[in-house]
Image (cartoon, rainbow, N blue to C red; front, top):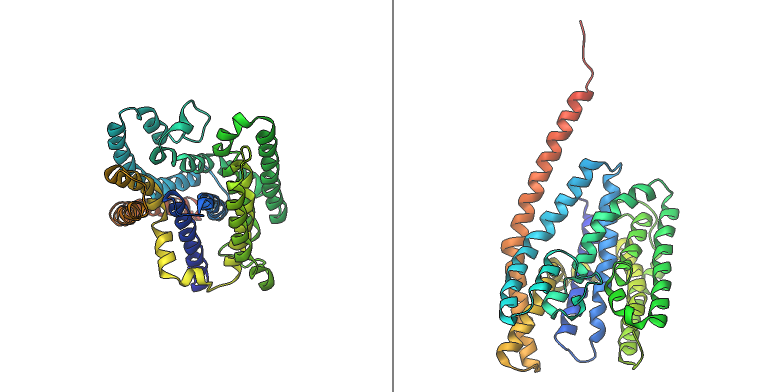
Length: 361
């Protein structure tokens, strides 16, 4: 990878650190940061962008490459999740009646309108976003095959139109069927549809390509736009209105898309130079998995929800995330990727042998 591309990756990792920091702050009940829960929408945009970029790099996409893609996703995500599920199993024993919630978390179905899913305790229910992304990994490759046949602008337009259409449906659901808005919020066509925004951007601004970039003037408004979106989201969350979470995604997801475009367009962005944010971004997946459980454990031990209790929970979550990343996620991912790379190399060698010209006589 070139140094230029590495700078982009570092900046996006820093943005991931910002997103997980917002989520942790919200779950730690930091005053005036309830909008931090919409850091998940930032994750969705980033995931859509990066995953679609990977899929486009694999085109033409066949069954073998689909298997390689899923294998890399499994090596990246499942080991840390498996360890977390073991910890959640212990938590289920403590609670005494969380077996169903554990099953929903283990089967990537927490985002579906299944009875009782929305009532699962936080350490289990947080897996709803992971479930949405897993379902995206399974279904999106087939659509990329179709979209890759179009021009980049048309493919992006279809993605953006899909997101806009799903948001319009969410508005109808929120105003005409409030009882359904709660599960629609987590359903793949609800807030997770922000994956389409990142996916559309991947067609227009490939991470390692040499296509068009965002104008510098527009790049400078990206961060303020995201901040304004977060503030507006926080204000609207405090209003005594009906179901609104399902409608607030665009206030964060849309400026996030603009920010990702800016980070890809402008090398050396400050988000990539902050060691703290980049480190948070590197452990963000593990931190997301464990932080709610850590907070609940500390609150149960301390018996309160005070500032110092939540601060101790955050410290415990950071330590747990570092250990999970260092001793589980990194080594298993390295081994898994190495095995997949060897498998790909063997296949390519066999293909070259079959296609090589043969001298006869």
